[in-house]
Amino acid sequence: MRRAIIPLILCWLLAPLPAQKKDDILFNFAGALKTVTKKEIVIEPEEGNDIRFVRSKRTRFLAKDGKARDELDFRTGDPILVEAFQKLNRELEAVNVHQTVSMEPD
View: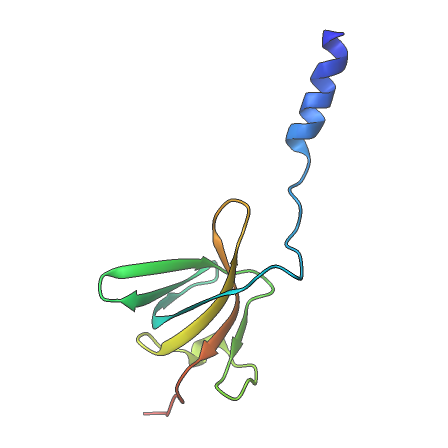
């Protein structure tokens, strides 16, 4: 009996977590862009508070008009809006990063 239960428990523990559903609710977070790396995005919604978002292959950077932009077009301090969902491990995964004001070249 015990030998039959151990493999079942191992299969349950090693099973992958369910993927994000397409109909999950996206939450909006607005703030000043603090940092962008290959793995995360950090914004500062108000002085002294930071929100970290995990980046994935689904994360898109969008201009004010909705067209795709390169992440390098976004600068530290730019006001942005991040649409994200909460993963099962409670991390926030960024889906869309919107420019909220036009970024004029210096």
